[in-house]
Image (tube, rainbow, N blue to C red; front, side):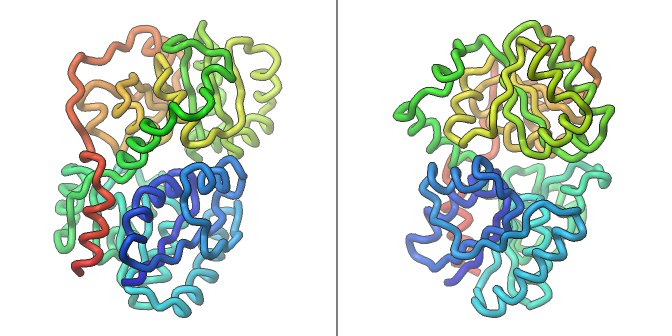
Amino acid sequence: MKVVSIVGTRPQFIKAFALSRVLRLQHEEVLVHTGQHYDNNLSAIFFEELGIPKPDVNLGVGSLSHGAQTGEMLAKIEPLLIREAPDWALVYGDTNSTLAGALAAAKLHIPVAHVEAGLRSFNRAMPEEINRLVADNLSQLLLCPSQTAVDNLRQEGIIQCVHLVGDVMADALKYAVNHAPARRDILVQLNLDEKSYVLATVHRAENTDDPQRLSNIVRGIRSLHEPVVFPLHPRTRKALQAQGLLAELSTRAKNIHLVEPLSFMDMVRLEQGARLILTDSGGVQKEAYWLGVPCLTLREETEWVETVANGWNVLVGTDPDIILDRARSFSPPAKRPPLYGDGIAAQRCVALLSEQ
């Protein structure tokens, strides 16, 4: 069996790490990096750190508007798929790389397998939601991380070739937790004590591209009277700079530690050690739950509804007063039921690809 796997962003590199390790034991994989994340700390370092095979192809598309980026990816993925003639095109998550890979393969009648199928925020203003809907409707194998995702597809009339496999990011996190102690501790480098700081991540377009929302998030973070570690995604750095907020955070907000994007191992270690996590990332919401760290999500909705239902994740939006209040008062329940699989989702995905 030959599979072309299409990735382009940090979370997809992590998912590919978990799945490629299993896939390559018995099958041929061509790993394609679209170039959607091209910053070294968001791209190359993940391949080096996790031992992910270097991409066989780097399309070098880079940062463009949604239409231009997706169009350029389509134009470059199509001839590659014609040349490789795979049995499957494998796409992950909800990015423009996901959309372009699924579209290119479907138009060439190459079966599409979608890892993380069935997620829904029910907010079509989010570009990620559009990407999920299109990818799921083009896929011949839908690999779902939760029963909720399976139910979402059923409600849309998608019932064929839908499988509950668990979340491959749980596989990757398990690896990171087991291997992180061998690395130099990022907490020591940043002079942080366990459970004495807040970790904040912001990268979604709905927050970075809306000046009022981004300004509110900054106000909320600044109001916390404790250390806040804030790794800056390139998009976020650019948006903060454009609003004059970057200099303000760098010079006046003494409790905020701005750092460059982190490797996966370092990010997991910071998540483990945090008292609280503020994020708009879907992946970080899950990692917080798995690690038993309270999470406040800087959005009005989430695809990972189970983390909210179980009381470990609270949707706070971007109101600075709500952020401050919940950061001070939020206390999750004692129980934390298992969610999103048991760390062997990758094996299930590969088995299903082989059976089709």
